Length: 337
Image 1 (cartoon, rainbow, N blue to C red):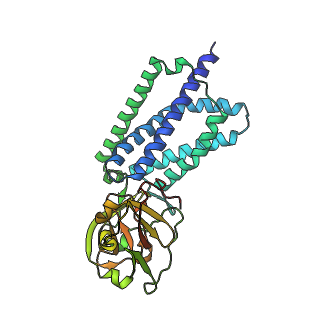
Image 2 (tube, rainbow, N blue to C red):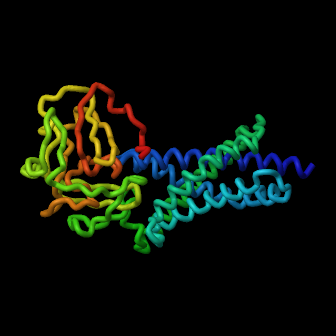
Image 3 (cartoon, rainbow, N blue to C red):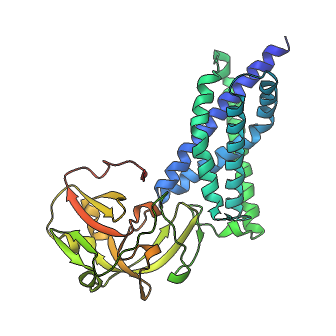
């Protein structure tokens, strides 16, 4: 009689953890996609979900210990999944408090996200290989109330943690609403260099570089003459943001009378992002930041400046700006290159 209630509690814990992991993953990616209000709300849910996962870990450890004693096939995958989830949680806490922002060449945010992505296929395998049989009682009013209490307690803990961070003036107190830390604002030489995934910094000669836009080719000297200016913050998904004064050419001035549904901005490396044609006036193709020309790491000869867009929208080493009839959403939400 004592084993059946224990199994039932184990199933309920596993279901709750699965739901919370899904919540954390989805809200994390939503925050990645925006540098505006949606990021603020999604990160709030993301943090509450993370604290709820931490609250369930003591119960999950009991379940895991029983599972390891049975020596079932695929135990290594279950152990690795647990390690990755713990690594992601710890890295997230280190980043949010500011206790540790870099681990070697990686940021705590990159470890947090990388561990979460690596855990996804293992979590999917775990769902299939360790199937949970839900019973009506698992979704009873009592259990739903328990779930509500768990979330309320997690939200309270999160609020208390944020209050502590600010009261004690920990490094995390100065985070932007996206969770990023300021680095090198209005000091181009101190602005960090970052690229999406495996996009390496190319060597491009200004004399041979050409930009294709508006039905013609532009040389570097022709583009450098433009002096449209914009102050904007590049908010990198790696965990930093930097505000700079950018100068260059507004995209609508380069496109002229080109007609279509969307703009596709293409990098020398093949990397590309698509935007609604209506945004052309608000986008800047920058050749300078501060009082100096861009360097290779920051996108020389020209990079796109996208106000309120996360770093992966700011295409570097731009070689072409195309206009076509495809909708702007006809692309993966996040670059795959």
